[in-house]
Length: 140
Image (cartoon, rainbow, N blue to C red; front, side):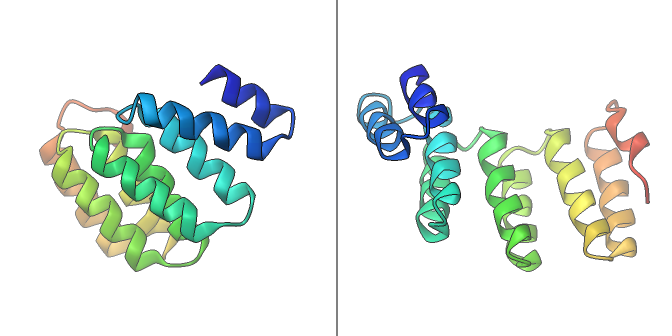
């Protein structure tokens, strides 16, 4: 992983991708490889490949929250709010007690201008994760 990161920092994206691909062959359930590969593919402008990489990573590592958030963020940047919402909902189903996913979903709705939906999500989040203080700092 560190070799791939070094190649990436030095600007050798093809070398970084080769190293990551080798790492995925050895450790197919290591989520950071999928994150790095997807980010490099996004940097190269290959959104379809990045989407497929994030999808595969989520299938192999469903409890890795940064994978879910990265894919949702990519969809949001493409102004595909419905797809991002669906991804975050699926993530919350698989990881129900994760406050980070709730916060991202609420922020997505606020960004989309759906204040009522954001308030409803916040209410559900408070019921699901009542001891988490992150919800209190959200601006609605």
